[in-house]
Image 1 (cartoon, helix red, strand yellow):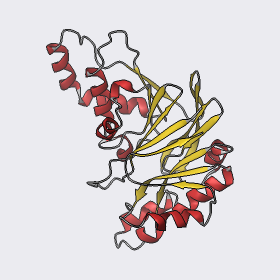
Image 2: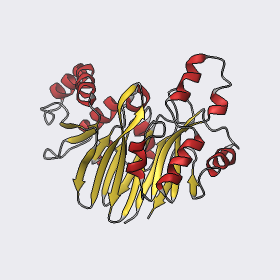
Image 3: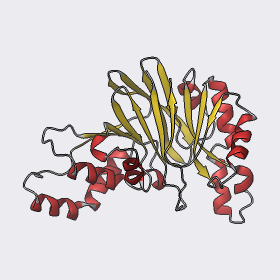
Image 4: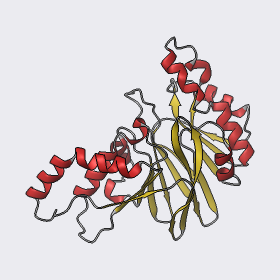
Length: 278
C-alpha cells in the first residue's frame, strides 16, 4: 500500500516567512499521522485539508523547541473542533520527558481550558490525551499500520527517536535530528524511503557566530544523510528541515550534494512538498 509523505514544515528554529517549523504528515492505510509539530503546523495542514481533529496520532522525535512549538495549538484545536463525545483521545508518542512536556502545556493553557469548559455545555473535561513514552521498539499497531521506534543520536538532546511506518509491504522511516548512528541504520534497513533532516555544513561554517557553528556536531549534513540512505538501501531520500533554508534556485545544488553519496531518488522542496512511496 502506498504511503503519502507531505513536508508540512521544512524550516529551522529561525523564523522564516516561507517555511513553517519542522513537521511531516504521513497518510497511509486510512490513517493520518503527524510527526513533530513546529510553528505553523496547523496552517500548513489546513492547506492539504487536514485538521487537528483528523489526526490519528502525534509522534515526537524529540523535545527541542522547534519540533514542539505548536504542541499546545494541536492539543487545544483538536479538542475544540472535535464534536463527537465518544471520540478517542489523541495519542501522543514520544521519548521520555514527553508526558512532562504535555502536562506543562496543559497547565500553561489552564486558563483557556477553564474558560472554554465554562462557556460550552458540551465541553466538560480537559483535552483527552493518551501519552506514551518509548526509547525503542513497537509503538503503534493498528491494522494495517505498524510503527517502530529506534534511538538516534542528537546528543546532548537525549533520548531522541526515529520512527519507521510500515503498511502492507511499504515502509518509510522518519529520522528527526541526528548524526549518523547504528540505531537509524538498523531502523532504515530495507525501507522504501527515508525522511531526513539536513544541514549544509559548508554554509553554516561561514557564519561568524559560534552558536550557529555548534549545530554541526549534532545534525547530519546533506552528504551524511545521503550516506545513511545508501547504507540502508532505501529507494527514496526525502530531505527536510533545511539549515540554512534553501535559497530559490539552489535546489539542484542541494540535490547534487546528496547525489555524491546516494544514487536513488532524491526529493526536496518547499513546504507542502508531497511524495508518494510504494
